[in-house]
Image 1: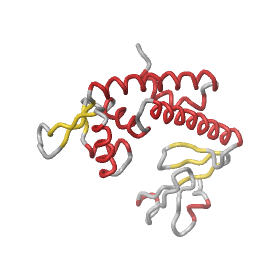
Image 2 (image 1 turned 90 degrees about the vertical axis):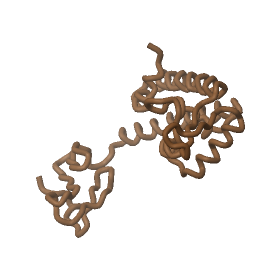
Image 3 (image 1 turned 60 degrees about the vertical axis):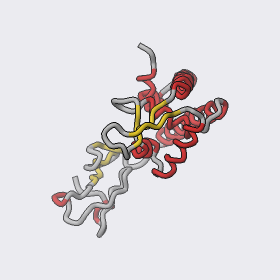
Image 4 (image 1 turned 90 degrees about the horizontal axis):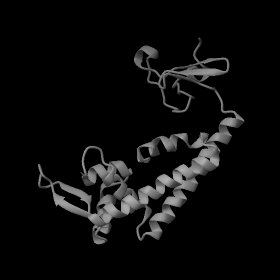
Length: 194
């Protein structure tokens, strides 16, 4: 298959989803080359075939997914606010409860999980601590490091809110026919009891 027209330019860019610019030196130099062959295109970076353009059905599915995602996020925002916390405070509690392998996390780890800046998470942790939702403890291995964990009040709140979020995800799936929510529901599967 010949390279697609996009890759014949001086600085070839993959036109399939990621838009990455290929380094000089061609495929042997690690270039991200997409091949066009009729109705599909091969993307080396994604190691998959993609349609070269989106169909009306693709746009409808994407729009429906974003709509359902926005419904869920609005539900989440209102639920958090109705329980006396901000949506970001709920996210912090959720990340502490769901942190892999242990029941605490550092500020740096929380910043990564929340996709936020370190100093912003420090302020968020302080606000949660003022509401007695979390506890700060000196690090076990490094006393300069602070281990943040849920208080009993925070644990009870995140349990209640997570249960409501799981139920809302399931309700959205039942009312939508489900196809556009499958990605969201994969994340929710671990919340469904036994």
